[in-house]
Amino acid sequence: MPTILYWRGKNPIKKQQQEVLDYLQANKIEFERCDIAVNYESKMFMRENVPENCRPISGNPLPPQIFNDDHYCGVRQSLTIISLLNFESFFDARENNAVYAFLGLTPPPGSKEAEALAKQAS
Image (tube, rainbow, N blue to C red):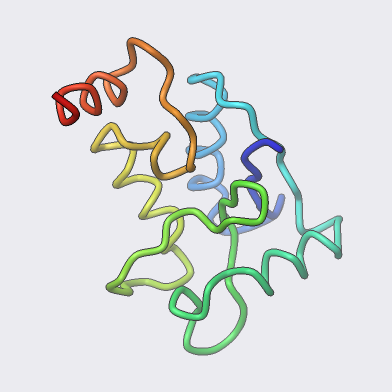
């Protein structure tokens, strides 16, 4: 099953959603895009499967949210702006060349992330 990006087409944080989408496409990372504005089941899955420590104090989790199959990507210990948590985690992983680890995927050979893992292992 591919990485799944839950998003909403007419969302005020569309720029963040597009940034995630652009990165996944540019790096040829297989993913499935689920627009929760038109798919009620996806909306409910996203809302029900964001971990408790990543939920907003009030209201529901907002997109973009990223899962690998049923596994939520981007859990962090310290909470900041809750609705943007998944995007911020993704952005941090991107800046640290750790997106594949963030997504729960094996980095492709020759990538900066694969090279960093090889250095750690030796």
